[in-house]
Image (cartoon, rainbow, N blue to C red):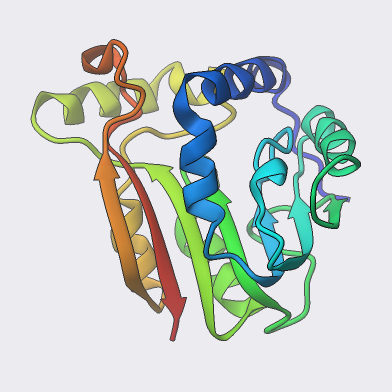
Length: 211
């Protein structure tokens, strides 16, 4: 069993995710997941906020979540999802799946928190069939003075309160280095409210194809 306990984050995240849905992440999640079809693996499912946005072209979602409290919430969300969802314990650096078993892997606001992006993306590539797609929504390294702020936060309090999250990772570059070809990429700031105070920006939403 792969248990990763983040008690502070596990209590905060469901409320933040629900508030985000009301403030504009619902259409963003729907846009992220609209290309999904066939068998899908979701890495770091959290409390299952994505589940309600999967299109009917998806035949099954296997949702991996290592945090016990979030895993229980995700299981409850899976029970009312519009597509079949099975929540399993597991971690991004050792995905519980055979090679090439999935058509799509979804990573939303999770590659910021994995111990090693390179290891996690190697696992994503392993479980995807050739030509399979990674659908991702992540926040990434900023520009200008924001870079210093992100470095300070990442070296101090942010990972503790945010479940291991790091604000300043160059995630798109690591995705490409892991053997994926970027097919679609949107770069934006979200939320727009108090954006100058938000260290989790800019954000990217995209599709990458396994080579």
